[in-house]
Structure formats: structure tokens, C-alpha cells
Image 1 (cartoon, protein in one colour):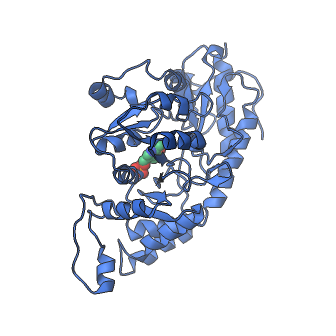
Image 2 (spheres, protein in one colour):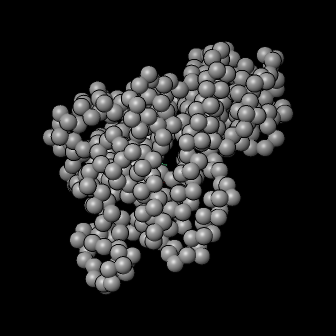
Image 3 (cartoon, helix red, strand yellow):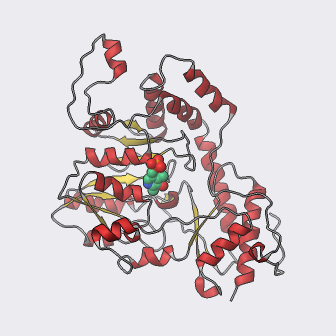
Length: 403
Ligand SMILES: *Cc1c(COP(=O)(O)O)cnc(C)c1O
């Protein structure tokens, strides 16, 4: 990979020439002609929603993961809400999760009227620290919600053990981790329920969309009922059975994923393996390129895990820099590198602060990481030249601001 020499070049933010002429986003879908055709075919069919493509996609996804059931939802957030419902979370209950996640993880607990309790993360993977989680367990705790941050599986064995010891249900938020492997098993078949997202920046894009996978028949049945208004049968089943009768058995929502989206998902699933290998290649190129950049701490990978690389979150060694993360972020954006930050710790969002009187200092590892985190572009459609641009821009900015 051609890398710029170590001469200090004026940064684009100060009027220099940007490393790239065009903006490189941090994540992006890839849509091929066969994806387009699959959607067109559905548009010409009898069913735009709750038709045959839904089951086809669910079966194919479950088979790909190696899990008994996959239940589709209209978003990853809906999938998490469904899992929280199926786990029986209710007012008065508590569920423990990580602060270093997208708000939807913790919000799914709130949707059920239960209380999210945050426990700090481990410094290496930035995933929920099982030891910290153990200290937050009370008589009211009912579930654990680890997140596979960036695509690196959470510490699932320790979390399982903690759950078993305390009679808790594990809902894994694997929105980042389709295709990740943990102790030689696929994420999606390990926890009691695992939620996925098919938002365009994720590995498999359906526009909006999500899935819950589980090996438990009772959870699968509740999830199917919940996403369809709490009805005991769906429109297609009624048509097949020649009946009009249905009963509402629980208070559900309309969280159905359309046949249009499922056809796209099925088509995208054909390239998932290939896309994962490309992401792993890009991660390896980055790791190699940043080995000698003191100001950059690349993401760490545990020996028992094979991440899916949704994100490539580096941490800045601020004591090697004259500026803070904000300045580095803006300098990289000026170079046309679409860096991002994942995430503002959830307990620091105004809504959470006001409702739970939470604030800085409660989860020092997550907060320390947050001050230093920058997600570099990472998506399977990235070309080698794109990777080189990111590496050159990072080196350029780090050289300029080096202390
Ligand atoms: C993307 C994401 C979600 C929610 O997914 P949507 O499909 O956008 O609703 C939930 N949790 C995490 C960690 C995510 O990254």
C-alpha cells in the first residue's frame, strides 16, 4: 500500500489540499443488479408484505447462522423491543446493559417499563464487563443485554455463567455482529435471543429491518405474535386456511418486515460471506498500517473471537497529541474522511440524565474511551485506494498534531 512519506503536510482544515477529493462515508450499503431484480420481482408479485419472502428470508437467515428460529422485524430497534417483551421485562424489573452503545439497546428496556442499569465496559473490547455487571445485579434484575461492540462478540461465556447463576435471560444486541464468531460458534445461536439490524450501514441492508434469532420455541412464538399486533395468525395463514378468524392474545405492535425488504435481504444474504471477508481484509490492512503510529490505538481482538468488523473504532493516545479528539475528528473530516464517533455513552444523553439523574464519572472506562474514540470508514464496498486514503489522512493528521 503506498503510504505518504513522513513530511508534514498542511492539513486541509488549515487550507491544505485534502487527501481525497470526494467524501468517503464511514459505512455504506452495496446494491447489485441481482438485488434490484429481486425487489422488482416482488413488486410484480401478489404480496408486498407478510407474503412468502418473509418466511424464506427468515429460514435462510436462520440456516446461515445455524439457529432454530429467526423472526424478522421492521427494524433492529423493533427486534430489540420484541426480545425485551418476550423476555417478560415489565415495570419494576431491571436489565443490565452497556453504556457504550446506540441508545436503542437501552431504550428497548424502557419500552417495557423496566429500568436499564448500566455496567461499565472492559478496556480491551469495550464490551460489557461481566464483573462489573455482576456488581449491579439485584433481586429485580431479570435480563442482561450485552452488545457486540463494533462487531467484536461480547464476553458471552462469562455473561452466560452470570445469567445462569442468577436466573437471567440474555438478550444480545448483535446489530454490529452478523457473521462474528465466538469460541468457534456463530453469533446468533449463543444467547437466549439475539437481535440484528439491517440498516444500510450494517452488513446486510434491507433499508430498515431487523431480526431476532433464538433456539427457544416459546420465545419465537411470542416474537411472531408481538410483531403482528398480538394476533394469533397472520393474513397469509388465514388465506391459506380459508378462514377470517383471528384473535388478539397480547398487546403487540406492527413491527412486520415487508416482502420487498425480505427479498432484498435474501439477495444480500448471498454475498454476506464475501462481504465479511472483505471487512476482515480491510481490518488487517488498517492494523498493519497503524502499527507504528503511536497516537493510534487500534481495536483489540481477543483470541477466542473473530469479529464481524461493523466498525473500525480507533482510540487516540491523547498524551501523544497536542489536540483533543474533537480537533482530530474535524481535521479528518476536512480531509474528506467520513469519520464518526460510536458512541456518546447512553447514561450521558440528556433524556437519561434527567430521568435517572445519571452523569459523568459513573462508568469511567466507557467515558475514558468515548473521549478518544474515532470510527474510521469500514464497509465491504471500500476499495484498496479508499483504505490507503484513510491511512494517509490519519498519518497526516497525527504527524501534524504529534507532541
Ligand atoms: C443499528 C443499531 C441498532 C438499531 O437498529 P435499527 O435497525 O436502526 O433500528 C441497535 N443497536 C445497535 C448497537 C445498533 O448499532
